[in-house]
Amino acid sequence: MFRKRCLPALIVFIFSAGFNQILAQEIATPKYKLPKDTVDHEAEGQTDVNDVYRAVFQKFRKRPPRNKKSGSLALLPTIGYTPSTGFAFGADVSGTKYLGDPDNTTLSVFDAFATISTNELALLQLTHNVYTRGNKWNIQGSYNLGKTIVLDHGLGTGFKTPEIQIRYKFMRLSEYVYRSFMPNFYAGAGLTFNYYGDIDEELNGAEGIKTYNYHYSMKNGYPPHSYYANGLLINLQYNTRDQPYRPYKGLYVDLILRSNQKWLGSEKSALQLKTEVRKYWGLSRNNPEQVLAYWLWGSYLLNGSVPYLELPGTGSDVNQRLGRAYTISRFKGPSFFYNEMEYRFPITRNKLISGVAFLNVETASNQSGVKLFNYWEPGAGAGLRILFDKHTRSNLCIDYGVGNYGARGVFVGLNEVF
Image (tube, rainbow, N blue to C red; front, side, top):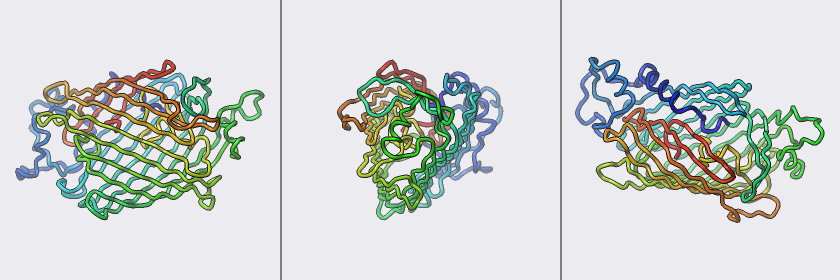
């Protein structure tokens, strides 16, 4: 998609500083003095963009204490440019809400992102991660609709290959439902429906122009210009994170067994195992924002085959932020494995500005003898964090990453990468 919603950082910050306060009102702003135990004391001593705005434009206006149980709604205007997409304009709306007691209920988050570009590309993305009272149920969903361009390099890792553009339309829908069966443990199931159409239709009939998608589709028996990949999901999850946006501590483990089924409309049957682990170590009692974070993401083909644009790879996570330093789908294969370590630390005393340094590696198989773990592709970089909302820890991420084969770039997004 539009890689990490790639935006000029300065323009984003200028837009955000004004719009975040004007358009980001609390969902449940208290109108009276709150009891002492309902005020969010964690945010005391911190400064976010809201505070900066009030200090500059509303310094005489008093604001009541923030109720920790109230939510927030924030709008982040976006603008960017790449040679493939042209100029892109859009907006990201992010909301949060506690649906129960914050002491035993995880913060629920909702996100809506939309963008269009001068090259007639478009994306609409809706996601949610909802925890009911006492974390009894966890409901996760992702809905994506649009048309885009992928800078494609074929299958596997370890080789520099020619870059070929793939242009296509897509619809990806998934919904998971988890039920808590013991503290921090969840089991559940879900459905996913994915469609890819009008794939390189402008090349249809062109002599000598064949994409990696075309060759893979012909080899594996898929129609090259459109296909479905629909399946059933069985899930196991363990979660002790203290917060989903920007955890200071805890462990998150998610195991998904996906079975694509022809009776659901898939072109072919397939069985995949997907694994995800996120671990957070707090390094300082005085500065809980000082964190060492680890991310493992993997997808392994156990049986059958999946269409080309369904192959796991760079940017295959829900928010398409996996693999900073590389463009989406830069590396992929029937099986794919990814690791990342990130050090997070505050820069200013009031926590308005923070920093990160990260290192990642990824590996993928292909269908020509390259096995998973044969070759690794590294990426590394550093970035800044600007605190938007100290009560929900929502922040703007501005990263610069470098990798193999001259890969480099700026990656901008709302909230931590993982």
